[in-house]
Image (tube, rainbow, N blue to C red; front, top):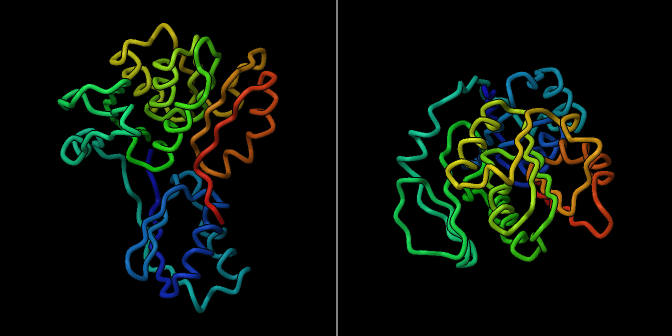
Length: 245
């Protein structure tokens, strides 16, 4: 997926926080802060220069936020980049997330991720928090939905926790393909079905004991009614990717 990177100059940290929250509300799903600058990332097809300008003017932020540059970040060989930098991730001394080439001590749960162009290696706080919470959720024999599966890491974790079947959905073709590769590496193909699409891909005739959604606030808000109607009685809905603001 190709992203647009908008670099903004915002010397006041309070205004940086406000503006990040506003950008999150219009589809920006990644942010970097460095000194007085913000780098905000949005999928190229969602980028709207007029909408960005409208937010700055609507909240009278012209004196506090300046757009420094706008650039397109093309797809990269994330696999090669990740291999050169990635270290295994250990969560609560129970789960290790690692690449096929890593040698690690034995843990109760081992997830092997071969990253390509998808999100989800365990390094991001939201992914680690989801796995940490999943350890406390009854999964054995459960029907599970992983909405926005990325690399398939949460679906694989659910399978290792004993879920009977997991439906893993992502709107990015690269993520869907990466999930297929990772569930094969982790030997749980029989437990996981992958589907490509948005919320309309959620099977309308299926209901779940557990729904996992580690995505961004906009998608969560858009899909929350459908996710809730897909829950069985006394089911568990785990959400992450929401700013505290």
